[in-house]
Image 1 (cartoon, rainbow over the protein chains, first blue to last red):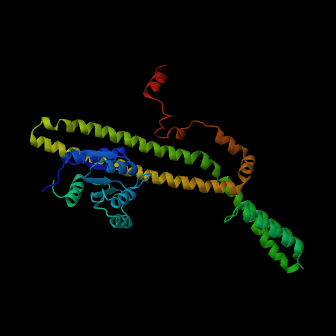
Image 2 (cartoon, one colour):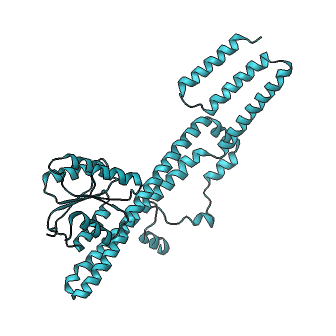
Image 3 (spheres, rainbow over the protein chains, first blue to last red):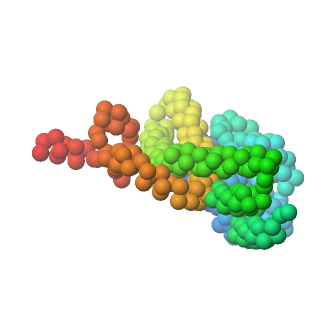
Length: 128
Length: 218
């Protein structure tokens, strides 16, 4: 069974421009229920209030970073099953290792292209 | 035989410095300590020991010379003029690239809006091309993060310059007083061909096209 692109997904990035880029690429990929947050704290509130099927988050944000958001999500009984993809310019080995230890589902390094985004999405949620 | 009073004075002086700035010593304080040692040495050294005194005197002159040379580099000017200008220019780069990126995306979204009005093949071409434009627009996020790193580095340099100015004490003012012609030169902003090549102005300082037209036609 293929992934339902009408399910709500949450995109988190403190750069509004990047949110807009991601939204447009998701629209091109036929996703129809895209929600956005500009920081980790509001993202966590949004996740707890909603029923999200995917989280895509930047790492470098304030006051709560993407890795802190990931840890909060994985520690929350209601949220821990949600696939979490980190999309970040942080490309050091230790970043990837720490994200993996925290339970990240996949990791995309900026700048990326639509094909990379699609292949990572497929590897996390399956064909859509 | 050494005078115990000189030793006590020096110990007190060193203790004061330690209390004032734990972990670091200003050039001014080093000078004072060397001066105290020399003072004590003058009283106590004799004969062959005079060569030690000469060495210390040489060291003192060297420190004074270095202080004057650093003061002549005008670190106060680096802090008050060059660093803030560099930070403002970098902020302007981020703002201008963000603005340009948003305008590119506005136009691309408008093109995507008519995808449904064309045949399937043309729609696909428009979709692929639009995706490539959006991908390319992510440069703004990356450059923004890089510029933020540079601004942080400038802040660190500013802190170091602050420490340098503090360590130099009155040496900078002394240099300015001693070189009135240089200080005056810096105050007069003479227009030269070189001074007219400053590149784009910061938004608050730039003239608008309307203002230029008024100036030309006024």
